Each structure stands twice: as C-alpha cells, then as structure tokens.
Image 1 (cartoon, rainbow, N blue to C red):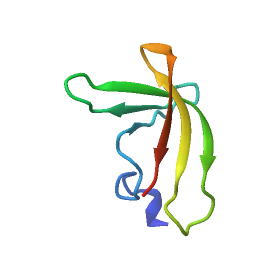
Image 2: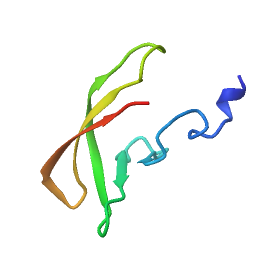
Image 3: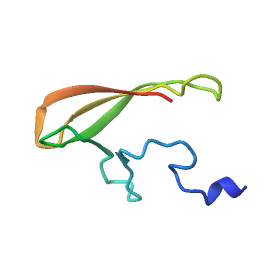
Image 4: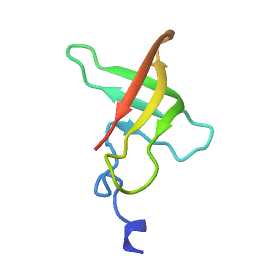
Length: 78
C-alpha cells in the first residue's frame, strides 16, 4: 500500500523517461548525448516482458521529436 505514494524512481522506473499525466500527451525519453541532447517520442510498445522475475525488458518504437523520419528502437531493462 505504501508503494502508491513512493517516487517512481524509488520504485525502479527509469528517470530518463518523461511521463505526463494527461492521457493525450506523448511519452518521451531524453538521451543526454554531448554536445546535443536528443528527445525521442515513443510511438508504441513492441515488446514488454511479463511477470516480476527477470530484467523487466521493454522495447519501444520511437522517433526523434524534431524529425519523424528518424526511427529508433529503444530497449530498457534493469
């Protein structure tokens, strides 16, 4: 029950993902690449591991926020 009030980073969520409360908002991730940081827009989930055992791997299809023709695959695990 106390997990409902914990910060997402404390719960193990990746802090580089920008999560918005509005359902119509796009989910984004910031990549801190020097000298020009990039922002990627998440298009859809391609794969998400089910269950609590394992590395929690999730893969998304994404594109650059400044150029929709630049496509990427993002893989996150812990």
